[in-house]
Length: 149
Image (cartoon, rainbow, N blue to C red; front, side, top):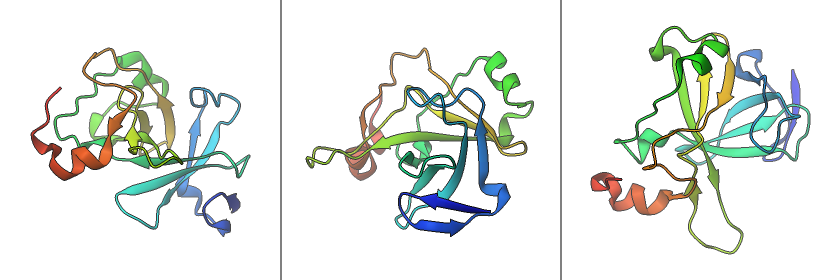
C-alpha cells in the first residue's frame, strides 16, 4: 500500500503498520486510519494519517523518559480495542515540537493505547493528576530519571 506522508513523501507501507482509531484522536476525530512509522531519529516515531498527508504526529514511548509512568486505563476502553492481555498493548505519547524553540513536550495525560494484535487504537485520558499534557522530554531524558510526580 502506498501512503503520502508529511515526513517522507510517497512511501510503500506494510499493512501491518496500519492502525485504526475508530474514534479518531482528540481534535482529529474525522481521521481514523493511520500508519506507524519509525522516525529518522530515535526514540521517536511518526503516526501518519492515511487520509491526509498533512495530519501526522510525532510519538514517543513515554516509559523511555519516565520509567515511573503509570497508565491506569478503564477496562471498558481496553475492551473497545480488543485488549484482553495487557502485555499486548503499545503505549505512546504525542510529542509537540514548538517552532519557536521552546521545549519539546509530550502529552502524558492523553496517551495512545494500541492493541498489537488487532492494530486497533484509542486515545485515553488518565485520571491521575500527576500527568500533564506538557512534560519536557529533553529535560526528563537528560536528568529526569529521578523525577517524581
